[in-house]
Length: 86
Image 1 (cartoon, one colour):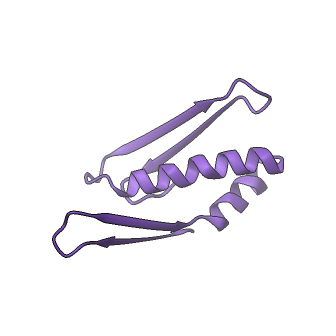
Image 2: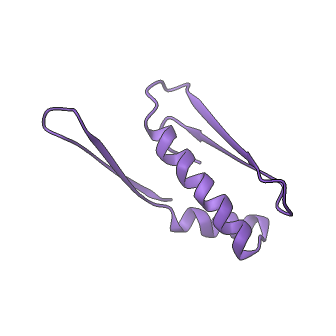
């Protein structure tokens, strides 16, 4: 699920990441039966967690992101490992 592509400049001063999480967002929508708005919010958080997780170095590293917007959706949580799996 999802694809992350990373590029590093020749001198190592810049790192660029691109990610396609369409299938992850679709799976979130399918599992949780969320509205389009909630799916977009959860998808954006999952995408951020995947990118940030993929930047971690240790195999035991985990990242948890949580947003509480105070609205109908409530709290959204995304967890990623060092490979960017959300």
